Length: 396
Image (cartoon, rainbow, N blue to C red; front, side, top):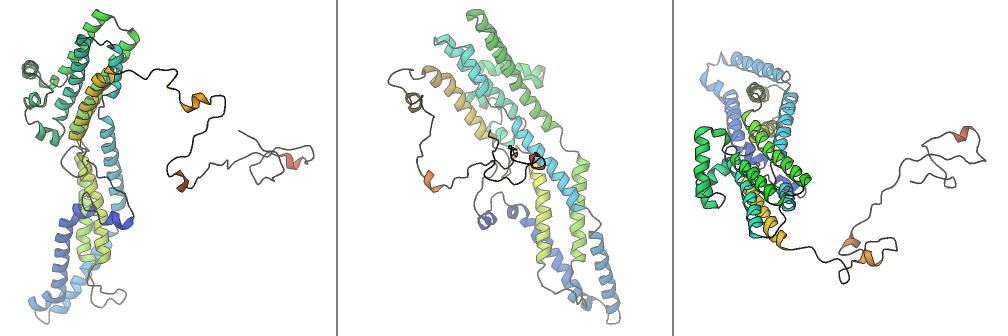
C-alpha cells in the first residue's frame, strides 16, 4: 500500500520504507565509487601512469575536459524535463486509483431493488454481491502482480469462495471462445438475475434503471483500468527523461571534480552538494519509474489485495447484516436532544478535549461601505477600504 507518514522534518527523513534512501542508495554508492575513481586517477594515477614530462600536459587536458563537462551540465534542462515527466506520471497514477471500483453504491441500490426477506431474495442479493467481487478478482488478476500471486489460476477463486465449480466450467468455455469476455461474464449473470427479479416481483422502474446505470459504471471502471494498463506513457518520453538524468550526472562526474590551482573553491573531499543533487534528481526520476505501474510489488504501489478483502466484507455485510436489521423506531423513547429543544436555536455541546483547541472563527475580510445621510458625495463611493466602527456594515 502507499506508505502513510506523519511527523516532523527529522522523523520524515529517518523513514526507510518507501523513502528516497531506499530508492537511490544502490545508485548512489555506484556513483560515488565512480566519482572517487576519477578523483584518484587525477590526484595519483596520472603521476603513476605517465612520464614526468607528460604529466603537466595530461593534467591540463584533464582540467580542460572537466571545465568543459561542467559547462555541458548547464545546457541540459533537467528540472523542466523531470518536472513535466513526473507530474504526468503522478497524475496518471492518481487517476488509476480513482478508477478502482467500489461496490457500496451498487449494493445499496441492490438492496432497494430486491428488498424482500424471503430466502429467494436473500440468495439473489448474496449471489449478485459475490459476482460483483468475482468480477474485481478476475479483472485485477490481469493488472496487479499481487492479485496474480494470490490467485495464480482461476481455479484458486473456488478455494477463496468467490467461484463455484459450475461457474468455473462456464468461465473456461467463455475463455476458450473469447478470452476478453471472461471477466465480464459475472456482470452478465447479474443482468440475468435482475431480469428474473423484474419478472417475479416487478420492482420500481426508476430503481431498476439506476441499478443498471451503476452496473454500467462498474463495468466501465474495469475497462478504464485495462486501458491504463495497455497504453503506457510513450517510451520515447521515458527515454528522454532517463537520458537527460544520467547524462547530466555523467558530466557531473568530471565537472564537479576539485581541480588543482582552483582558488575559488575549497576541496571538501566529500562532494556534499553533488550528493544532494543526485538524491534530488535521481530520486525524482525514480518516483516516475515506480509510479508508472501502480499495481506492482513496490512500496508505493496500490494494495489491491486489501481493497478486494475490504470490498468482499463490505458487500456481504450490506446484503446480510444490514438487511436483517431495521432502523430504530421513531417516536417516544428514541428522541434526540435537538428534537426535544427544536423550538430553540440548535447548539452543539463542547465535549472531549475541545477546550485544548484554539478556535479560529471565520471572518469576513471584504466589506462595502454604506453611506449615511451626513457623508459627502465623495465618501459615498463604494469601496473595500478601511471602515470606521460607527458606520453601518452589510450583513450576510
